[in-house]
Image (cartoon, rainbow, N blue to C red):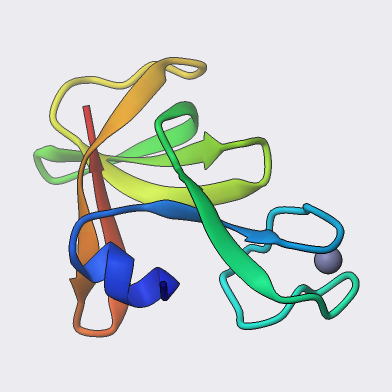
Length: 102
Ligand SMILES: [Zn+2]
């Protein structure tokens, strides 16, 4: 399993080191702590909004998963700091990861 090919299919897995069990973010082939191999064990479910901003008519928020991973995501409704959100859609567009949460 490869992080990017899974993300491309709409599955956001958390990359984790098989040796030291740390979350490896940004995703890479090897752990940045111990150079162990990476596995995709679990899917990211719920995240928490840390920050948000408004651009035109859309809200973008910084969402934290597993206290290690932070991604920018689009959100349809007015976000609140600390709000729990779920991933509605994710993928890769023009080489960039994108996320939509709800
Ligand atoms: Zn490691």
